[in-house]
Structures are given as C-alpha cells and as structure tokens.
Length: 306
Image (cartoon, rainbow, N blue to C red; front, side, top):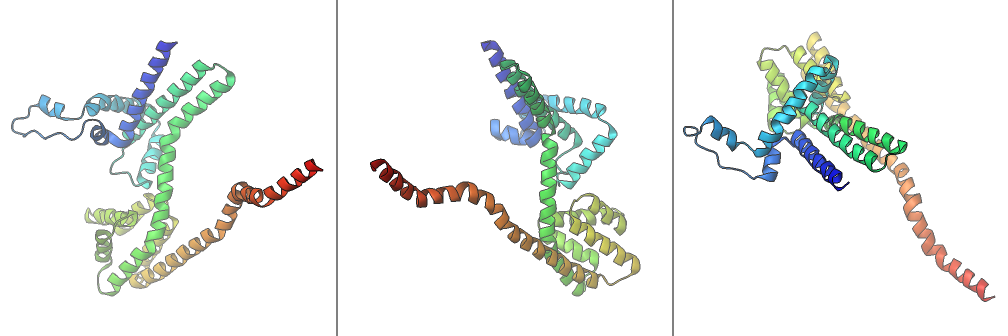
C-alpha cells in the first residue's frame, strides 16, 4: 500500500508540472526552478550547447506536451478546433496561446484529475466515490475551457467600460482634422487595454491591404462585447452611406456613456439584494445573540432560582 501511495504521489506531481508547463509556458517554469542563465556567444555555440542553454523543463516537458497536443489535434474534429481557436481569440490570448497549447493543457489537467480521482476510488472503492472520480476527471479536462470563457467575459466587460473614453478621443481627433484611420491609430498607440489592442490589430490588417469592412468584421469576430459590435456596425453603415464619421462617433460615444451609466446604476440597485443573504446568515444571528442573549440568560436564571 505504501508503494502505491508513493507512485500515485509521483504521478500527481508529474501531472502538476505538466499543467504548470502548459499554462505558464517554459519560460515561466524555468524562471521558477532554475533562474536565468547567461547567454552564450553565437559564434562559439554549437547545436548541443544551444540546446543545453534551454531550460531543463523545456527539454523534458516540452516534447511531452507537444507530442500529446499533436496527437490530440489529429484526433480532434475540425469543428472543435475552430471553437478552440475562437475561444483563444475572444479571450485575447491569440499572441501567446495556440490550439496545441490548449489541447496540451486540457490533457494535462484531465490527467491530473484522473489521477486524483483514481486515487480516491482505490482508497474507497464505492459507487459514490467512482462517480466523484469521473466528475473530477471530466471537470479537470474542461477547466482550461472554463478559464478561457471567464477571461473572455471579463475582457468584454473591460471593453464596454473603456470604449466610451476612447471614442471621445477618436471624436476629438476627427473633429480636429485627422482622418479616421489616423485618429484610430493615435488612440491605439496612446492607450492600453483590449480596445486599443483591437484597434491596433485592425490598423495592421488595413496596412496589409484588407478593406475597412473586412477589418471591422475581424474585430467583431475577436470579441464578445455587444457595445463594440454595435459600434462597428454603426461605422460600417456610415461608411457605406457616406455619412460624416465625426457625427457618428459623437453619437456613439454619448450612447456608450449612457449604457455605462445604466450598468453602474443596475449594479448599485442590485447591491441590497446581494446583501440580504450575508445579513441574514452572519450579521443578524450575532446581533440577536448580543441583544437577546443577556435577557434570555436572566430569564433562564430567574426561572431556575424560582
């Protein structure tokens, strides 16, 4: 029994390292385990030396994760791969994450969940524990997808919060005499965040020869924000019908600001409802104990004395 426990512990530790490698990448893991090394001059470095300069975790776990991800991609339907690419894109991780990395992370987390679930089943082989083990393995496998979905929703909320201010900057630039593309580039260059990032990528697509309508469509495909989609649709219609963009930007900025104000008011109005449960479960019992406790103690004491 002791050997089985040690083997399970080693397997879980290895799976944890695979998960960390898949989520954070080799650079992050090597900085946690080995520290930064000194680079070797290119003129004296052989292929073996250059390979040895890479982190040990990259040399050990990199081929494992890449191999698992490559086999998993060949077995995954094209529709599922397209959905993974969409999730990576809308979550804003297209520059650092790939489908292979997501598949490798899903396999690693699923393996970790399966090992923990298997250990629980071996320790207590009951039908209830078998169900728990299956749920744990399945939940661990879909955990990266859930994380990407949560990040995409948070990114969409941040876009809706930041969009009115950036539209004001674009409006000022256009009314000052800048062209739409120049104003868009200036906003993307002077600001941070997902909105500026999407505008910058749109301008890169424009510089590569893509039409404005196609670049707008790609922005819509890369986000879950309804406000940004509405703004892109308004710009597309204005561009088709030759409407003045300064007027459209001004109207859209006012509308987005009004929506942001309404959302803030909705959150403020929902706060009392959210406070009811902690008030009833945590505050009122303590308050009743402090107020009614001494009186109840005196009544109980007087009754016993009588």
